[in-house]
Image 1: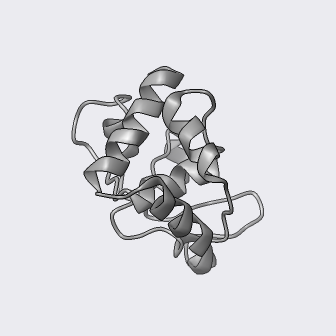
Image 2 (image 1 turned 60 degrees about the vertical axis):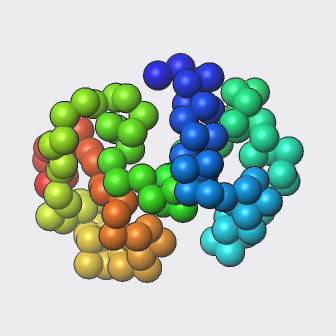
Length: 117
């Protein structure tokens, strides 16, 4: 999926959730992400894309259940269920409760590294 297609999908998701750009700005601000309205317009017009952490937050706000399927990366309905997250710093899923708690239950952790599961 190219930059323009991602932008159009973000706009479609916002509209499907019946949100205005101003409302998205406010929802992002509630999560300590402060952006201007024109920045969101830029994301939706293809001028630029949000940083990965903001992209994930937008997907959470828009209730995206599977990012890979929604954005056309994968077409099947196979979901990888996280069992544990292993990181070099030694933290696991149970130590990262606050970090993982930013996302709702509809957001799935997806990884291509089978060793992490």
